[in-house]
Length: 289
Image (cartoon, one colour):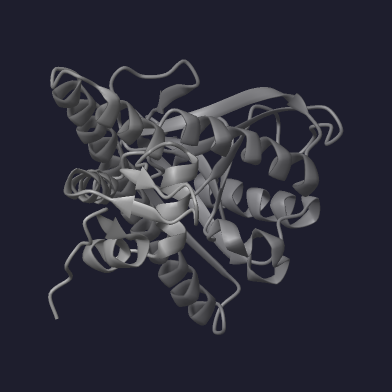
């Protein structure tokens, strides 16, 4: 049935039905001065809306569909000029484009995390049949976020430092692109675990300009020992010596500081039994005449 106004105008109920919103919403718009009724009966307090009022409600709904705030919509409705509307539209478009960029970054991060989880699951299955996998690997230059300082060598200190580095990465809108790692700028066999020169690193997709807390980790050959279990001093020293023996037998020598890659998703860091560690030594061939 067609809604017909009285001579005073449309009632609150009729207006709500036409605009397909609740009566409470109309009362709220009235309260904040966004859309006020054309007439209020002085005797019974009934509100009556004109066709212009209904048009204003429809404009509010249209602008809300583009996620304008009620404050912004109020400014548009009160404006006597159309000049402000294109600029507000451009601002809203830029905001939407930024949201899209952030969502695309989120999708990329989730994809990368899923790859980490799949890799970890596959490696854990492999370690049901072997304890350590030793192999020679070659890496290209890697773009990383880093923080280097003297600090305690341990899980608790490392987690706090990685959290702070993750926050900086997020604040700069950078995208993580690989497993986190630690570089030991010390002799791995003799260093003081209470006061060590340790650099924590997070691989990233390259970006321009490069923030001050990023750098390129040089590529090259690395002799690697991958094992399952929580990293500790005894395991690290034992495997390091095993890698040194391999280097001596195969004509290689150290070519930089030792590093550890943690082949786990960040969510697994709380489950120490799920750790998979890749201990690496950068190497080069020993020249023989």
